[in-house]
Length: 258
Image 1 (cartoon, one colour):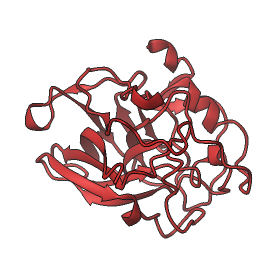
Image 2 (image 1 turned 135 degrees about the vertical axis):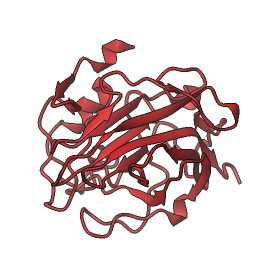
Image 3 (image 1 turned 180 degrees about the vertical axis):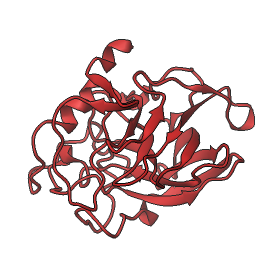
């Protein structure tokens, strides 16, 4: 699996994708570099222009037969491969001094809720100022493509923090409107989602698509998430000049088929 990371380079301790990135609004975080070559090629391929055709989803009108997106129990960094899925976990960070681990090839960490053996973890420290962020996430498919999840109500996951660092975590759900591959946005990456305050105890969170919203102060705005064209999930921290250790496990779809 290491061959999927040959387009990454290390700079100042954080992971950075090779190539140009679309220019963003001054208040908007730059796009995250990605954890495999497919995403890097997609996210650096030209400037987003908006108003183009939405790419076809890979399973139009077909409800997922299995609701687990990934529980980490196979110990690798690939999400479940059912229903044409099977994207990869990755971390990303800004270019303003934030450091995040793991870098390069993502590795699961031992531990999890309710006897789980493995979970996704990112740790590090945010930079002292500027547009700061670090995140961990996965694409639902590989190669990266939109997935029709409109027969489901939303997503659930377990999360926690460790230590005295950052507790504020945002779940981001990139869709065809907010990621450049969808051809709809000019100032992209303001994904639908929700802000949470993690604790040092594993907690289950459920978030319906209908309750997801964008951040108010930057990026292109859309009336609601496009659940028929979802690309992945990410968990992001942004508080400046702080350490962080964020854990995520048992990511599932909820309310499917009903």
